[in-house]
Image (cartoon, rainbow, N blue to C red; front, side, top):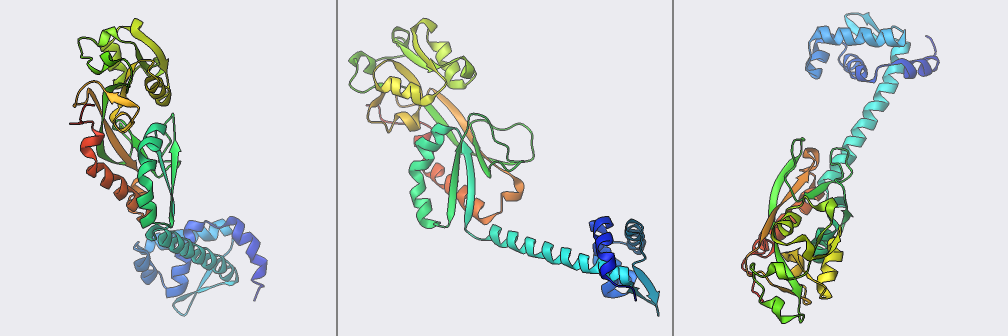
Length: 314
C-alpha cells in the first residue's frame, strides 16, 4: 500500500471542499444510494461530484470491492482532510450557535450622536443591571453605517429606509418644538406664530437644509432673522441655552432641560418617524433580541413624551 502521507499535500491543494461531503457519505455508507439519501440528492449527483473530486485531485479515491466503495490510499488522505474540515465546521457552528443563544457579548447600535447621548445613554443603566454580560456599543455617526457589511448590529434611523433586505420596525415618533432660554426676555415666553418672525433664530446650515426641522424654520422664519447656523444640534442647543436666540429642537432634548422653556405650546410643530433596522440573520440572536426589546420597551412607555405631545408649557 502506498504511503498515505505522500498524498496529503497534493490532496489538500487540489480538492474541492464542497465535494468532500460526498466522499465522506459514500465512505460511511459504502454505496451511492444511501449516501444520496443522506445528502438529499440523487445518485447521479453523488457520482458526478465524486468524479469531479477525483479529477481535481488527479487520484482515484474509491475502489468498488465486493459491491461496496472502499477508499484508496489517496482516498484515505482525502478523507482525513474531509473529517478535519467537518469537525472544524461543526465546532464553529456550535460556538456561533451558543454565542447567539447566550445573553453575552457585544451589540453595536448606531444612530445620530444626539439620540445616543441625549436619549439612549440615560436609559442604559437598567438594561445593564438586567444583562451585565452584554456590552452595548454606541456608534455615533454622520453617515449611515452598513448593516449588510456588519458595521453595526442595530441601526436607528429617522426615516424609513428604501429597499434593502433588512428587518425594519417603526419604534417611535420624535417631536420638535420651539424653545428659548428660561429666564431670558419675557417676551419670548409669550411668542406666537404671528410673532416668530420678530425674534432671532438658530437653525441648521445648508448641509442639513433638507431635514424636516430645517425646512420648517425656512418656511416660517425670514432668513435675515437667523443669527446662527450649524451642522450640530449641540451647538444650536447651547446657543438657545445662552439666550442668543430661539430655535426648533427635539422635545426629548428641550423638555427635560431646566435651562430651556418651550415656547410653541403643548403640541409638536414637526414630527419625524424613528425606525429600527437589523440584519435578518441577527434578528433572532439572543443578545441582539434583548437589546431590541429594551429599545422598543422604553419607546412604548415614553411614546407620548418622545413625540412631544401634550407637554406642559412652562
